[in-house]
Length: 417
Image (cartoon, rainbow, N blue to C red):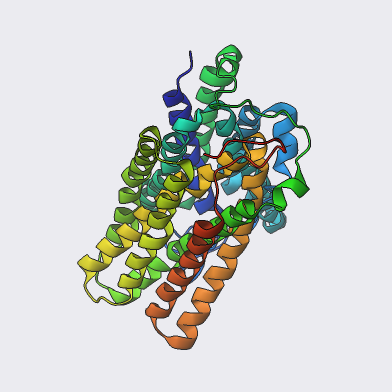
C-alpha cells in the first residue's frame, strides 16, 4: 500500500521543482548581453516579486482537477514547465523573433505552474488523514525552500562554470526526471493511488461537481483564511525580494552565499517541525482551530517580531539570525492557514486554495512595490520591515478573530472541531 511518506517525498521534490522554476521564471534572459549575466540569481532591486507569469490562473484550475484528477494534472503541468525550461536557451536563439517566443514561453510557464499548487492541495485534502495533514503538507512545503537552495547554490556554480544556459538545462531535465519517477511509481500503479481513497477522518469527501460559491464566500472563516494567506504571501515576497539587497547594501563585504543560503536552510527543518508539532498537539486532544491559530501566531506574529529586529541592528551575525528566524517561522503557515483551507472545504480545497493563492500573489506584487517606494522615499530599511510587521499582524488578527476549522462546504449540521 502506498504510504503517506511516499506521497510526501514525491511532492516535496515536486515543490522543489516548482520553487526553482519560479525563481528561474523571474530571471531575464537576453540573447545579446556582454556586461552582465542574463540570469541573475541575485536580481536588482525588487526583481524577485511574484513571478509575473505566476499571477496565476489558480481559480480556473478547478476545472482540470474535477475532470482528470489532481495527480494527472500535476504530472501534465510539471512535464510542460520542465520541457519549456529545458528549451528556453534554444528559444533565445530563434532569429529576430526570439523575444516573442520567450514571452510566450513565460506565459505558458505561468499557466502550467498555476494549476500545480491548487491541484496538490486538492490531492492532499482527499488522500491524507485529517490528523496527518499538517505534517504531510509542511513536509511537502519544505520542498519550496529546498528548491530555492538548489537553484541558488547549484545554479550559481553552473552559471559561473558553464554559462546561463546550463541552469535552464539542469532545472528542466531534473524536473522531467522527477515526472518520470512520479509516473512510474505513482500514476501507473493507479490501484495504489486509488486505494488511498478518501481517508478524511469522521466524514466522507463530498463529490460535488460544482463549487458552492455563495455558500463558501458567505462564511467569515473563508474570508479570514484568504486574508491571512494574502498577508502571509505579501510578507514572504517582500522579504524574498528585499533581503538580498538589504544585506548587500548594509554589509557590502559580507559573503553573498551566507545570507542567500542560511535562512532557507533553516526553513527546511522548521517547516517539517511545525507539521509534526501541529499534528502532535491535535492528537493530544487540543482543538484543531486552537492549533491552527497557534501556528499562525508563530508564522505571522513571531516571525514579524524578528523582521522588526532586522531594522534595528548593525551586526551581520545578528542580522543573519533574525532573518533566519523570520523566514523559518514563516514556514509555520504551512501547518496553519494552508491546512485550514482543507479543514474548511476538503471537497473543493483546490478551488479555495486557488482563490487564496491568487490573492496572495497579487498582494505580493503590491507589497514588493510598496517596499521599493518606502526605500526610495525614506532611505531607511526599517520602514520596509515595519511594513512586513503591519501586514503580517493584520492577517494574524483577522484569522484569530474569525478563523474556524469547521467544514463549510456542505449545509448539513457538523460537529465543532
